[in-house]
Image (cartoon, rainbow, N blue to C red; front, side):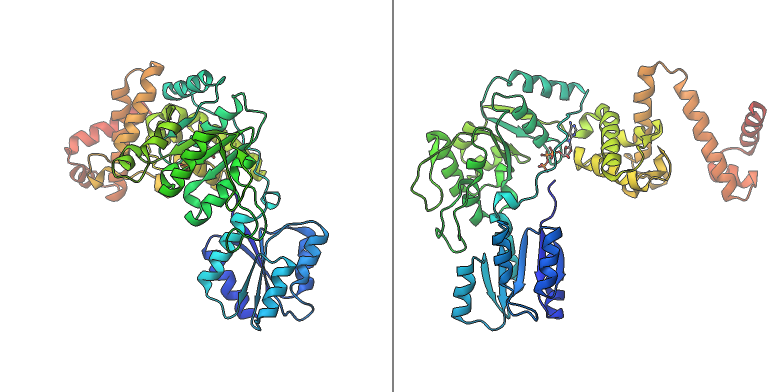
Length: 465
Ligand SMILES: Nc1ncnc2c1ncn2[C@@H]1O[C@H](COP(=O)(O)OP(=O)(O)OP(=O)(O)O)[C@@H](O)[C@H]1O
């Protein structure tokens, strides 16, 4: 997952800083605030935001001078200017100096957010944070994953379109990267775009680029993802969310092999292999008319279906080990290991968030688990055990028992019944005696067994000890 975009706000009015910081943080941006041009310039020597929002009239200098500083260093960070003393001249000057957009105060917060969103999407590729080198190792011993590996292997000499289906977090992007890395295009770029994350009105220019002035806010020519991915692979994630008009355009580009930037006249060659992914049922979208059937067939030359994690629980130990190690390296902490009973518990979870959810749990454990070994009780609360007292047929403890049995049987372990019964009695006796303050008569009553039975069993245990 990429990092949240960083927005720097420069305004000498504390109330404005407060309001903007709150609104932007709620919209999932990271925010830093400054109150003078000096402070902002100082910060620019050490860091680089994705977008700068600056007042023009600041106590020490004109806020627009930041544009001169950025230009001198050839840094293309979009700057949005704000001012309470707006007039046409000032707006014109701001645009001439190269601001991304201009917001006269008092502004509407929704307008600020949409302008920032648009600046983030259209910032030049060079200012986007370099994607973290992904650990492209794909883990999975389960038969289902072995089948996925075989398909990737079979496709390694081809450039055909692949549609990857599977629940969210099941590893679709990992598969897309693997397909790219094992393809004749591996020397070219791998460019991913999440169709669902980009406002539909910006998606066309995001994909195909635009010419300067082709629409409001298009202040300079921009290369689209098709151009960025030339010679490589374009990964279209969440393809099911693509608006119909754009589906038509995409289909035409894929069929004809060339396209124009938005507002452009130069015909560009679409030199990409397209891999698409979806967690949705595209058949249903085709039936209700929200997805084009002809585009579906063009994208879906081969389908790879990612099985959900809960259907390949045998992958959990290796995945967890990998994620615990990765988290420890990233955070500079010691590598933790899972106790066998913790693994059994993890295997019995429903994993609605799939591999990504397991990855998050491992990151959490890396920081929070107290010791080097991770015990079941160290797991986050949502993975903890509910007792049988809740009386549901699918209570997790039965699932844990099931997972334990499944694990124990192939190891050749004998006397499973005896082991389980002894452990169960031990827990029941201890808890009941604890509850009744050590009174055996009462403990036998609450457990629903005869007093003599309880006494005999306790004696047997004492003798064994
Ligand atoms: N088999 C695997 N081996 C190692 N890491 C994996 C594997 N599968 C998934 N991951 C990791 O789990 C996380 C989620 O995977 P990925 O982003 O590929 O899922 P996705 O199906 O594309 O999700 P979404 O539907 O939300 O886009 C990523 O950090 C990825 O590196």
